Amino acid sequence: MTADEFLNSDLKADKITTMQVNLGNLCNLACRHCHVNASPRGKDNMSRSVAEILVKVFKENGFHTLDLTGGAPEMNENFRFIIESLKNVAKKIIVRTNLVILNEDGFNDLAEYFAKNGTTLVASLPCYTVENVDKQRGDGVFEGSIKALKKLNSLGYGKDLELNLVYNPNGAFLPGDQKELENDYKKMLKENFDIEFSELFTITNMPIGRFKKELLRDDKLSEYMELLKSNFNQTTIPNLMCKNQISVGFDGKLYNCDFNQMLGLELSENLENFTDFDGKIIIKPHCLACTAGAGSSCGGALE
Image 1 (cartoon, rainbow, N blue to C red):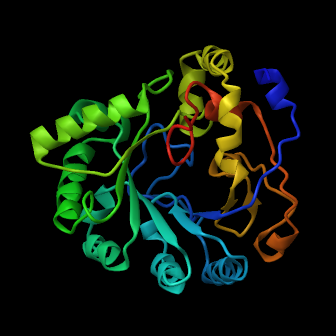
Image 2: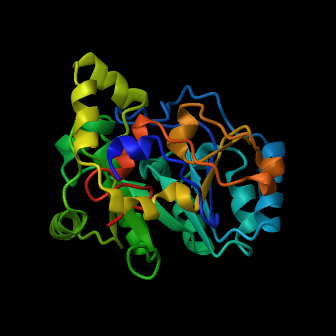
């Protein structure tokens, strides 16, 4: 299969086992690579009524994994309600955290809360150097991330509890080999900060949101899309996250993934009629980011 054939294919989802929930675009950061355009001014946030529906749908449909994202999902007022409603139902609960939220007033108990509930953490740390992290995410973010990681380590994260880090390239290129980068991260973080973590996930930058604006500003969008297309890898297709994951928006609308959600590519079904989902996958050019090189997903490389 070629890239063009993939873009025109009638791809269908397999059994949906993961419900990924985007609680909204409110965040304490405004990272330059953020596909959600999240910021402290974010106004799209999940209501209690939608949160109650998603808890009901999760329980009734036998999902395995609950994956909470944002924005900073921790800032949504229904965040703990969802976790506490499903912690004895879901086999695994994942929270995608920017780390520095754990240092903010009003959120200082989050690390202990996560440990108490056995929550798996996926934490954004696009590099192990202060220069690259602060350039991509804002001044002081690296220092705050290290502080949060040390606290998480003290509670057993990276040891008995699962703590995964996320690497995003800081430009218009594909991630390097995931295992090699993981080895580099583990070496540098251990030697310089005595920090441990479970795995590293490499995620290809999506040509949407702020990153797309950056590409357009630098007149590199066509070049980046050609990079994705020329590195198309058909062997990644069976492992694409849209094959076994559904994405829930802050308003209860359904999407194949968080990226489609940000582009408004909603499915005809919503949370309340999820059982009618026929497995349709909406494919657009940005989907090539998931199939380029070793592939990309919210769980890292696909091969």
